Length: 370
Image (cartoon, rainbow, N blue to C red; front, top):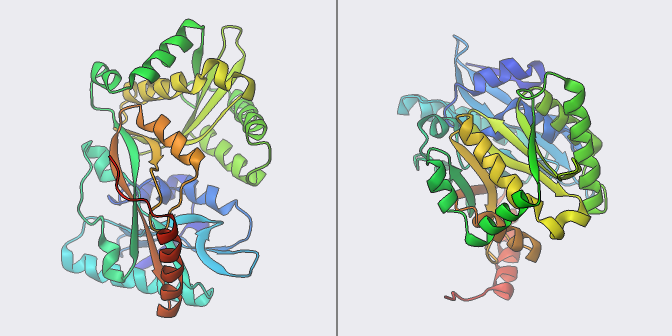
């Protein structure tokens, strides 16, 4: 076996290998890693694919080291969790052997960079599930074997194999009314991507228009310019689509950027021109048009995003996050588990973090209510 490193690869070759590993999702893709590397204070990226002696991929392992302002090291892309190791379909004995090697490499990497705690993200939908248009449960909790602690939340996913009537019937009445109102007010949605435009200049200009609106809506710069450049490159390369809502006077007022990988898509970033946000509610139509687009183009799933309800262990959602969750849930998607795994190099660090987390959880705990 040999390690094929991301830093020596390119988009086509890396994604070609990744697409052969059934447990991979978007977070294992070339563009996801490149985006993560653009955050500040990333000191190393040693992501690799384990190949056999015939260059057949056995596993994909995402490794990045990030150091915060307190000089504490994390296995992370600047606060964004690395994807869990993904494995190909192998006979059980061989899989166990490959697993042992990969997790040994992760441990050595943590020791090298003095990383004491690890957070890994598991894709809600992987390549095999996109191909089969069905989500499975096998190997979803593998990391318990390696003493990782799971944190499970819901994410809303639209299964696009449903017919149009069924899809629309699952949308809430309030969303349906606002979608109809937006259409009545002359709102149109344009899809900007490699398929729609041969003109790269148009794609790039629209992406940076979206960035300007995002800056206006947020009121501040939320992340490095290089991350927007990485999104631009993904869009130009055909790994993403940008949906733009225009008024009847061709004024762009709302943007939705979606990532795409192996027939699954997800909402990546969104922003509205502030003055139109409440007056027209453009995002309602924007999300629905994205759903229609991905269904028409043969995608299996569209992940609208994470759904937060109340305080959980390792998660304390803000009121804004809970409000956005209500918006997402009303598109009628099914709720699928999205797992984040926490691992620790030393027991004393694990115990300290868990004690602190349980204290916070107890203080904010709310009892079950109907």
